[in-house]
Length: 315
Ligand code: 6CS
Ligand code: FE
Image (cartoon, rainbow, N blue to C red; front, side):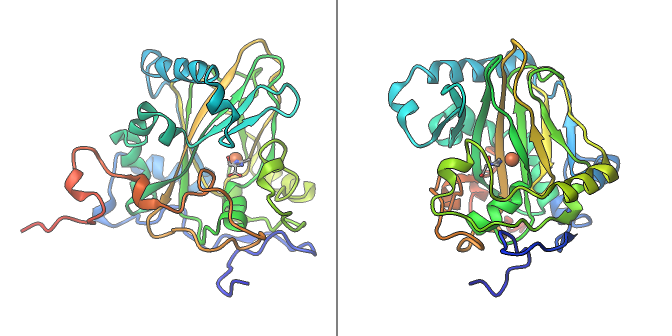
């Protein structure tokens, strides 16, 4: 049992939500961690828990990534691996984890200087990839995702100690109001919502198909949605969503003929590496919660000498 568990969850009895114990932006006034986000963007991220960049990448820049996903679906060995989660209804691909290790193209994208510059600015440190995945929703059949905080899962099942991680989601297809776009509750990241229900053995085998444990109760979801509303950013393939690890989000099933494929890179601060799970019987596989941070360190390619060495001496 952890004595440093600031965010108790997966409890036997209900517990009221409480204000987060971590800053949203981790190094606001430290010169070392300045970056491309201006004060207006930083304030919006701090207030809402996410930032939306419509058309961040051009269609031509992201099309090869979507095409690689289509080609991967023909790789029978990969499709049988535990990194691929099938849709509980259709049996087709729902998620592919560890994309940065499967594909060089995806790996390089984790170090895109514009994304990395914003992520290091928000987390105030060097960063590594905690988890990467593609969530895929084929037309007329892609299932949805229950309301949840990613941090609640990463804390309870992966041992992530503090709220110092951010997800970068790149839309590989258009996200419109019909094909199951991600929905977020602005401001929900300010509160930790403890969940009732202990984590079953090897929970991830079912939770990645349909999450039953670690889903906030409806009263707390309603309270936070009444305070902050619900937003579902929409835009063309190539758009980028940055969202804080504790921002509540969900998505509906895809009832349209159009596919919805989104790529997610989860950046964790190098000062926030994983402990033992805070509320689960055992660790999850490394492709869900990476414990080899050195192998997934994200350094600007033009500063290879910085890799793993912190700040260069300026003499
Ligand atoms: O368990 C996880 O890590 C995954 N589950 C959800 C619903 N979102 C975050 C992550 O992909
Ligand atoms: Fe999630």
